[in-house]
Length: 496
Image 1 (cartoon, rainbow, N blue to C red):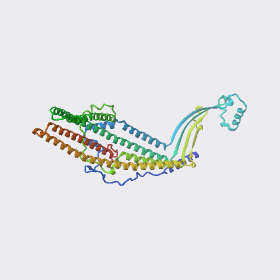
Image 2: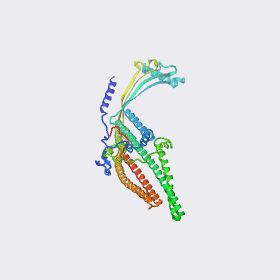
Image 3: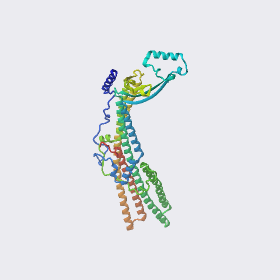
Image 4: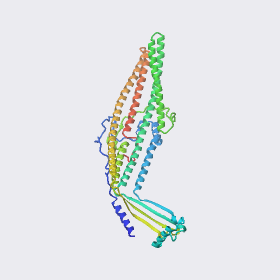
């Protein structure tokens, strides 16, 4: 009974010492740069208000909204990221359970025999039995053993092992596993941000290609009419073969632009089908009549750099990985110190089944186990150095990720602002081309202009429309890139 009390006291002492944790504590990510109150490259169309996560709704295209909903519900990339979250959570549960006792139950039937007795030998075997009987009394199993010197033994028992976390190695491992879970969750958000941008970019490219196909076909019809008129003028002696060849060359050049546009339409349809986890061709009918390229809103909410650093999932991933590697340093440091485990087993052992659970056959074993390798020729110190180097790498990666994120946002703002100015100029050019066509048509009615002049003005008007269309598509693409650089597209459960 006194030995059992000693074991209880040892366990209590051990529990009192498990508050110690070696290694560095994580106090948050380092400050990379002074956070400005506003973005440097923002223009007058950008506001510092909190942006909306579902930014694509501002484009006003229900087809796009539906495609994004389908993508987030069925895309394998999101499923992969979510599966990794479940895997990380299971690892955390496993690591947490490592700090608890390990228990087990066992049962065994053993049969042993003296080989000499079984073979019919006499001298040494009998002498050994006589000696055992003379020294043991009740300890001699030979008196109750079956004939031939065989002995049956029945054993039932329960055992438990508990490694005491004196220096916090297991608790550091739980810290690291918890940080890994958060990093996996941030990977899901990063996948959502990327996928929403990819769907929007592909949809805009599809709308742009269909619009360009329509305008190019209009231009082709005008140029075909011009060629026919020029042939009539040549037949009447008012034009030369060179005039006809020049217009025919322009017609052939325009016609050659149609196959790449049709190929671009097919490419974007296939890409959208893949993003929504469908087979190629599944969206051809649904997206056969998409509207023109959506224009971005007149003003864009972008928030501030501090909110960007809190919101972008790749920054969250890098920060959680830094926390994970910091905890790993503590694990490596704790491995240098002794490990103490409490071992215990209780059970019953008897030579006959009916005697197995008699109180006289009860056995137990309990006590601490110390393990330590103080002379490991530098292995533990090397592991600590490796962990510190990995932590320094994670910190450098975090700082680089923050700098890249800020540069990405500022560059996207600059491109978006410059393209907005370019679209304004293209709109003016389109308006002047339309006015030129209107005036030329009036001259035709007044008899001061030829039909070819009107057709030529119409061609310039169509080209101006095409340039404006391409400029608007690029502006909307830049708008999407800006939303992606701001880390938008997902909703933070905490509301941040």
